[in-house]
Image (cartoon, rainbow, N blue to C red):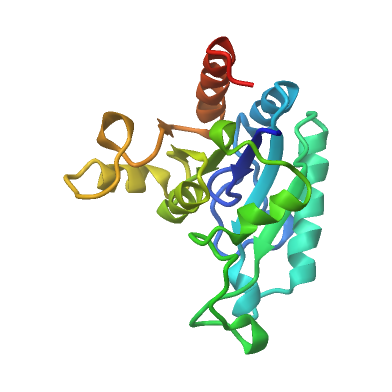
Length: 205
């Protein structure tokens, strides 16, 4: 079985830009390439899962998403931090145009994007992670059955403040619904690697 890091894109790996599709607007966040490199060196597969409602709204085409991902991987590959697979949802249930206006199984917090990785990997859910800056990322990870990490970049700090308020429902360590809260993806990666070492020490395969 294979350990997979499922990653949100905007606000997690790159600066949050509304409806990002132009490569000149792409800014990789500090520490991201090195964090990916370290995770890959440990044997994790790196899979991006991203909602792209801009396609549904007609702001840009699916081909634009693919071109941006290719360019993003060129930048990351220069630091040995290339993404193994990109999966995106082009739909929106209310604001889509034509066939893109639909209720789908791939738009987070649904789990379809994560399930797409099963075409390529025998996912070890017990030791895999979903990392993102939005509550929908955390929900998708929980529903899919992997551990979750919320990062403080993008919208994450605001989401974390809201989760610190008293609320009912599923909670994990420290009274929070996610396994890790970290200021950045690089911080989350360090904690994931630490816990993976602990898992190995406990005899998990």
